[in-house]
Length: 209
Image (cartoon, rainbow, N blue to C red):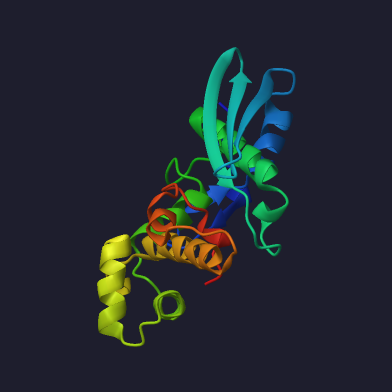
């Protein structure tokens, strides 16, 4: 059986794990399964969350393998999801369908992007995140000491910056930025509603920290 690990095409990510790029997986299919495979994708868009969801189905030798991905459009023009969230989402979905087939798998099923997301979920909030949270809360509330800001944060988002992971701090920052926009707009809005009625899945790449 032709080797599907693509070791010579793999890249390293933090932690030493190796992953094959999606383009190299598709090139492998072209070279080794020409005429015997197909890739079909279907996408959905959720405008309120600015979220794309893509399902990819890889058919090889009559067998099917599926992969799903989710991406949120970014407000930062420097990031790929500013203009290419759908394309990025489709690529990830195809990569996971290929992984289901065993193509490009060496260390684990996860993609390189999933590894980075997992690291963000457990890594403590950065000093810059913590400072940005306090600076934003000061602008929002007028509090000028840490104790008062911590009390406000515990009530508003359920914790203080030192308790947050990189991921949860990113979500809190997103909510605070949204609250600040509402406060500064002419349209009145309840701050508590802004802080609590946002989706749990936030694109951390869109947060300027």
